[in-house]
Amino acid sequence: MRGAKHGVRIAAIWIVVTVIVEILIGIIPIPSPVASTQAQGEHQTLYMLFYVAAPIFTFVLVLFAYELVVFRRRRGEPADVPHRPDSNPILLLWAALSFILVLFLAGWGTFTLHEITTANGPRPLHIQVIGQQWFWTFRYPSYGGMETRDLYAPVNTPIQFDVTSLDVVHSFWIYDYDIKEDAVPGVHNVAYFEATKLGNSTPSGHDWVVCNELCGLWHGHMRTQLHVITKTSFASWANTQEAFEKKIGLLKDLPPYSLVYYPTSNANWPSVPQDQSP
Amino acid sequence: MNERGTKAVVWTSVGTLVVIGLAALFVWLLLWKPAYGSQLTAQSAVSLGTSPTGQKTATVHLNIVQQVGVGQHADWLGYQTPTNPLHPGTVFNLPAHALVTVIVHNFDSRTALRNTFFTLVQGTVGNVEYVNGKKMPLMSPDLTSHTFTIPDLGVSVPMEGIPNNAAPNAFETIKFTFKTVGPGRYRWQCIVPCGSGLYGNGGPMSEIGYMSGVITVT
Image (cartoon, rainbow over all chains, first blue to last red; front, side, top):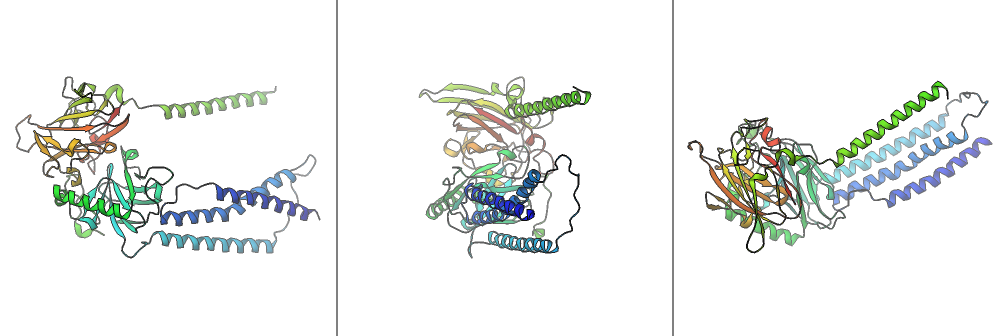
């Protein structure tokens, strides 16, 4: 039977191509480096999507290419062939497979989403991220609400970023650790983070916090350094910094720690009463 | 070649040329460096020197004025060269690994910071500034007017503003020293939302030559 011969050929080509593509997916690294537990979850999901999508992708392409080559219209042949009725069992199989696949991926994605939007421990270290044109600053409520220009974070420690903005919408992005959260004025957004690698050990060699939302003249330069350090180094740095800010008088000049700020100090700032805060 | 063939050849050639032209334009735009220097460079504000120990030095004299008085936006405030003719004072070249002393005469009044963190003097030699000769590591939030902030060098210095009842042409003198690192282009800005628009960061804050600039270190 000629049909069966073509089916076997297509299946053979499809299997070979699929195996090659699956191996390539396994070999080619997907950016960015996996340096946090959140990044692990995201990467696993990405790889799962690629592995599942690859056979479908190759099947469509192989079938298309095979038909182009083998079933192309030759000189003297009619332009169209008689219509063949749909095969119900094949349609049913296609619908059932698609249903199972989509359900599986939806379940997997939902689980990952839940995992990366939940704190890794019962008492995460809170670090507030404040976006402003065109600068990031960070406040540490566990250390007297001190504020810093660079972001310091201890490794292997569950962290909760409380993200907000003092002016327009910014987006807090740590590329090397796969963390991203919008910084919106008057809104308290949350991102969870647990670094599994020390800073500068990631392949790109340097870790930056950048802005990922077009925010004005210096958006492209709105970046600051991230230092993921050991727990003991962090404790020592934080205590020294808090003592310094207390001694010099900065701590008392800073506004009381709050999840959102409505700076009324500038005449242009729309004044919003504190009790309307979310 | 028939008419159809000729048409095909002509259109293919035109199409190819357009594509090549667009690609060339794209590459040119990628390589093009904005000519910050040509019109805005305020090199008259910079004097270079060498200390007895061989250390390269530079001194930058700047004024902060409520109205720059020249150019397209004469009524905007900004950093300006003190020399005549008046010139926007936010773009200049500095030598690498040099001790740069900046002397600012601030003729502008006080504006509160949005984030009082920037009352802290950062990244200067000794982490201090001198306001009218008085050493200061931190400025009271009531006194601030503007800042001189170079994020990638870690430098941020608050500028004290003149009091509301100050005499005409009164100014505060702010002096600080920082060290440049290797060659590169460093953006700098005032962090006080002293411009126009809803959040105060429009106008002079968003245009180079007023409250934002570029320092090219060579």
